[in-house]
Amino acid sequence: MNGYIVAKYLRLSSEDGDLNQIGKLESNSISNQRDLLDSFIARAPDFAGATVIEFCDDGWSGKNFERPAFQDMIAQAQKGGINCILVKDMSRFGRDYLVVGNYISRVFPFLGVRFIAVNDGIDSIRPADIDSLDTSFKALLSDLYSRDLSRKVRNALFFRVKRGDYVSSFAPYGYRKDPDNKHRLIIDPPAAEVVHRIFCMVGNGLTALQTAKVLNAESIPTPMCYKKDAGSSLRIISCVHETNFWTADIIIRVIRNECYLGKIVYGRTFHDTIGSSRYIRKKRSDWIVVADQHQGIVTQEEFDRAQAAVQEFSERGKRTAKTRPLSGKVRCGVCGHVMFCARGKQAYYYCRTPRVTDQYNCSKEKVLEQDILDAVLEGLRIRAAAAVEMSRIRNERQQAGHADIHSKQKALLKMKEGLDKQERQIRGLYEAFALGEIDRAEYLAAKAAAADRKEEIAKQIAQLEATLDNAKLEEISSNGFVDSFQQYNAVEEITADVAAAVLQELLVYPEQRLEIKWRYQEDFERLMSR
Image (cartoon, rainbow, N blue to C red; front, side, top):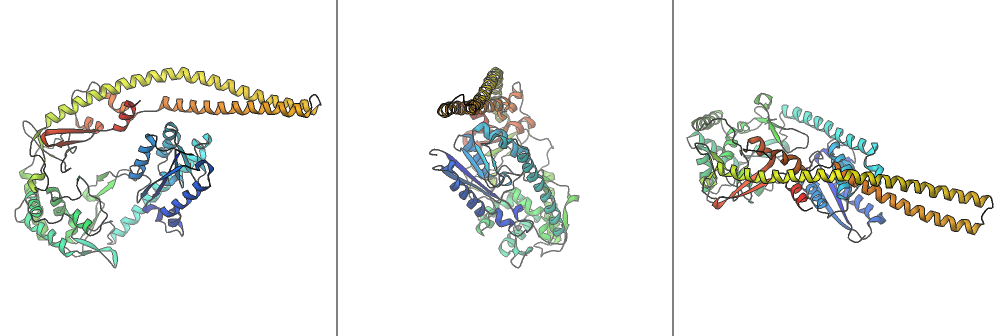
């Protein structure tokens, strides 16, 4: 099948080895999945000559559909670059039965992508497999398994923490895991010295910003860079560069960490949904805190003095708790950090990076919040008007599609009647031959002609049914851009709720050049390309 592209999708997460069942981890391993899919492709005549590409998410939960390789695969499928997606079983594709079901029954048919789950015997080329009870039940079981497993793992972790085990993936800056017991922390002298120095500097009167500036001037690696240099796979966040630098926020996080008193603190945040990357903070009363589990880096007196200093600086610069409309969304396009909003008669944003390091050429200009809001409002009005127009066109197409679907349904019914007629004719020919009304040669010739007509009608029926399925799917399919943006056609101001609904982030570059990254950008571009 020259030009036919098959995508192998492989996934493995820590949840797949949790029960310690013999052979369970190996059965789900990346290498095992790859071998199984390669064997299936080699045996399938449908894939002879096809181009095979691979997407692999190693260490990602099946409940999280923001997996990088998964998103890359879906993006290529949307562009028409994939004809078939192949997985070991449905649990490898995902463990949320609603999302999985939507992809199999709606998204992939709409994109013209074939979906095969080898061990589950599911192949979307067979229409009955798409919405079958068996398929839905398997997706539901996978979802329930993931939820039940998550509860068991969480409960087991809570039990281990309460008895004094350190269970987090990475040791806090200043510590490392004991080679003889990975659930115990031991001091990492070079980093611990920096931690102790931070507590002393803040406790002796330096602000967090001043402390960060001193550390950057001395080229002391940040916790992120220190761990990466030590071989950690911890990913850099909130930065567009390979290295990052000390900020006031990093200093505050160090100061607030009770781990440096020798305590294990667990459960400060939780995932709002299983597999989600979004964290929600818990009340302190709900934390698990176990004292005297490892050697402290600072004394209680040093810790308390630093807390008091941080609190004093916080009170000194205290402002109203009013949330700004673009809070957390305005970033410096040079260093990638969130810009600070200074409030007053005219609120403005500026990058704080030049205050702590001269490593980047960030603009020192002040960008008025109102100027950014005006630019967002103008862009939103344009997109909202486009969404309204696209919604109107979609509705007109759907109305026209109703008549077209009805016409095709009538044609389909007529074809099926013709198919029944051919079957009756074949049975009649056999009866005529059995009764001696026609000879063998006449019977075979007439039967062959009727069988050819029957096969041709069956092909036409299959094509028309596929066309009808796609027409019905497009009729009910939604578009995130249209559904979200059309409601803001009469918007008069950008509020925090509006910004959360339509904006991903805003990047500010030197000379006040603004780049707005909107939500549902792919849906918008897909509509514009039609």
